[in-house]
Length: 110
Length: 110
DNA sequence: CGGTATCCTCGGTGATACTG
DNA sequence: CAGTATCACCGAGGATACCG
Image (tube, rainbow over all chains, first blue to last red; front, side, top):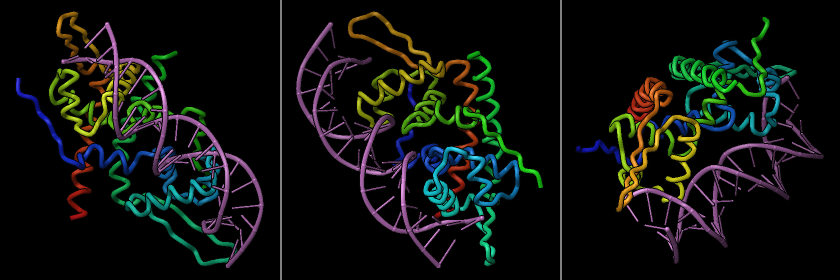
């Protein structure tokens, strides 16, 4: 039987995983989906175990990958709002599926 | 506006990511989906950059998580076949979606 | 053929303190 | 409020050699 082998240096599956992998990206995308718009401090509270450095770093990566939009209000005190971009929104069906699968597996373990 | 915050210690999204995250798991699941059954050496060729240690470690984790089935033939020379379990198959729609999304993004970059 | 056994590297993550 | 700046750690992943 002839096997299908895709040996591209950058497999699309790998590519996608790199863009949404990492310790917090899945949760951030999910929270932004649930809330539409969140401020820096709100994300920080939602991801209670995250350090400011990691939060900033992670949302910047998501912004560079065009999954998250960052809106800065030049006020005092400062205000920054995060939301999903169109491309980020395209990931939601996928994250929803993954979440349901995860819930099912957790249920199985009990 | 009241925000939706899910602060469970083990969010299902996180849970799922941990089970299919890692450098090679996505590709292994995808290859097994495409080929139905693959031997150790075939997986090794498919994932040309993987070391035997990492391959063994990764498929063992997938086996422990009941995503992959490992069938040993007690022959000489030895023969081991890997395939997706039912639970592993449930991830395929998700990986398919992710793959298409990845292809689209790669296309955008060009 | 299908793995193990060691040893080692490196970068993703964390802790803490400070700032416009 | 929304970040930066440093320094430190540790474990996922890699290199290499060997085994039943």
